[in-house]
Each structure stands twice: as structure tokens, then as C-alpha cells.
Length: 481
Image (cartoon, rainbow, N blue to C red; front, side):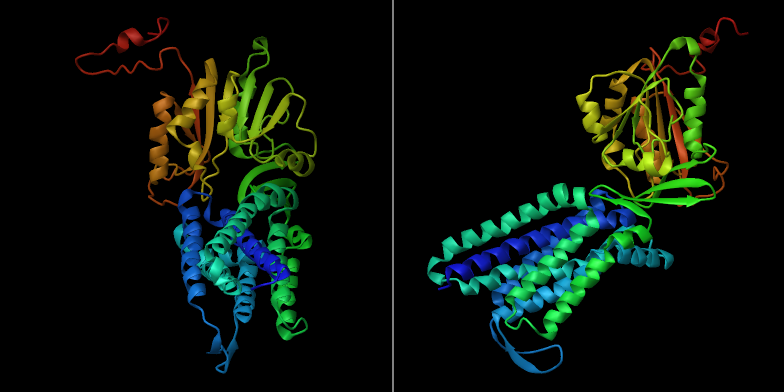
């Protein structure tokens, strides 16, 4: 039988183990996002790297028997349940340190990319295999190992209680770490909390509080704290590291650049220069609005640094982005001024906003897809573009910025084009820049591709000209020969 104090300690251990595992899983998904993207394909690899080691860890923990065992140094010594728990957590802590530290991951992924490891599936599998599988396998052994301390006569009741506290810990790891910690203190500090929790558990469970193992434990924790400190984030020019984005700001040659998850999102110079695709939108849209037509209602999906229309004080803007911190970052670091009273910022997902609002717009601008690795899969579907079209006024326009192959060399460039034309017939496609790549099949050749659509009353009429039925002479404007 265990005392009440020991029972509380054991259930606290189980709860915190569940928290660390789920929190580490979500941290792994979030930290790998800038390097491998946020698609369901890569996320599923990380989830699999957690679930399978959990299963094997439960089995291994249940089969453990205290006794003399060979150590890593070749000698035999007695390994108790307590010793096994402490050793497992110490090894897990040592592996999670680099796996949950952005500064170390940045160097690792950049090195792998330099050596030609560009496939996101391989990168994700390497990351999960190196830093997730083993810690989860070791931590999963906690539940069956702690069962050794409970009476076998109340096995059903104790098992139910153990599962309750483990699941409660997982719930807190899923909810508290993301909605509270990542949102308010940042991803790097959330990782630090995991390191500290493991350090405390190792210390409490160890019989000798002053030993080399405890010193090693807190040396690892200290390294985790320093490696994820505010100073390290500052050195990497990271100004925000929340549950959605890692945002950095760089200044070069009089230009201020905003990077979101390592993608160049926005640029603004001292002379008002912006990214070429932003200037393209302003040139064909804002600069051509007739003065006698009054202010237009414009919806922008994807805020970036709010550079689009930053000088426009006439038209009315609704700007939607999931990250509420973007507005303050843009005003402080990029625009260095307020976005303007004619611009309302809505911090929410694009599809949620489109589903909730009934407002109609003269123009909808889609600038959420950033290309490369961070593909928002739910924002390239037929159903999503139907939502956009339903928000257009009868003569409204739609403009989309995509990072795609300019000559349709990739499947996504072809399939996206097929998808968007189902909802927006007669949409035009413009490649920004000189390199169209007509004579190459290089799939790495990516350019900003602009889709521009102007609604017409007879969009759904799909008439064609044939040799036997040709009405082109009737379709020409009456005032043209």
C-alpha cells in the first residue's frame, strides 16, 4: 500500500507526463512548420511518431522487472522502478532539448537543405525520428511503471484513475499549452516550461538530491532556458513566436522586410516601395478607381504587414488574418505608422470570417497562400472560392496572389488553375517578373502568379466557336469593325 502523500505524488507524476507528451507533440508540429510546412501530410508523420512510440512504450513499461541489469558503461547494477523512471526522463529531457529549441532546429534544417534534403516528408521523418520517437517511448513507460506502486487488489479502480489523470494531463497539454502559453508567452517559453517540468520530476523522484545526475539534469534545463531565451530570439531577429507564426523582421538597404515562418511576406522601403505583386495590385486596382464612383469596399484575406493600400485613405478595407499580433508588428516595425482609420482588422481565420459575414465587397484580395512549404490546404478548394464569390457584389472583382510554377510545371499549379476556373470563369493569369520559364521543366522555379477576375452577368454561359456554329461576327462590339 502507498501512503496518501505518495499517491498524490504518483498521480501528479502521471498528469505531468501526459501534459509533457501532448505539449511536446504540439510544439513539434509548430516548430517544424517553418521548415516542412503545415499540411496534413507532414502533421500526420509527427502524430504517428507520437502514437506508435506510446504503444510500444506502454508495453515496454509493463514488461519491466526490477533487477540487476547491464548499464551503458558495461557494468551490472540494480535498477529499481524509481531508477528506471528517473533514467527515462533524463534521457527524454536530453533529446527534447534540441528537438524543441527553434535556434538549434533552424541550424539543423538549414544544414539538411544545403546537403540536398529538400523533400518535406524526408525532413519531417528525420526530425520526428531524431527528436520525438525516443522521448515519447521513454515517457510512455511512466504509466505502467507507476502501477508497480499500487495495490493489485484494486487494479480496476486504480487503472481507471491512472487513465483519468493521464488523459487530464494530455488535455492540459493540448489546450493550456496552445491557447494560453504559446499565445501569451511564446513557443520558446512554452518549451522551457516542459524542460523545467521534467527537471523537477527527475529531482523529486531521485533519492539523492545532490548528485551528478541532478547536476546534469539542471545543466540540460539551463541550456534549454538559455537556448530559448528572449536574447536568442532577438539575435535571430524574431519579434513574435506564437502558436501561429514565427515572425522576424530584417532591415537591408533602406528596406524593411517581414518574414512569416521563413517566408518573405512583406517589404516596405523608405521611398514606399513594396513587393512587385503588391504594386501590381495597386496599379490595376487602386490607381484606376474613377473619382466619381466613391469609396470601394475591399476585403483583404491575409494581412502580411498591411502594405497593400497603406497610403490609401479613401476606400474602406476589411483585413482578415488569423494572427492578432500582425497589426502591432506591422505598425511598429514595417509601416512605422498606423494602418489608418479606414482599415478594420479582423483577427480570425479567413473561412470563418467569410462564413460569418454577410457583407458584400467590390473587391476581394486573396493573399494568404505563401507557396513553398506552407500550403494552407483549406484555402485552395472549390468550396472556399465559392465562399469568396458569394461575398462579391454583382460587378465585383477578385484578385489572388499565388506562389506557383509560372509555366504549370508542378501538379499544384495545374490543379489550382483547374479549381479556381470552376468558380471564376474567364479569370486571367499574370506572372510577375520576367522569367516565365518557357523552356524549362524545373519544378523549383516559383513566381508570384496573379489571378484577376471581373464578374459579368453572363459568366455561366459557356458558348464556343466552331466551324459549323460561329457567332463571332455577332459578338463583336457594335462600334468596332
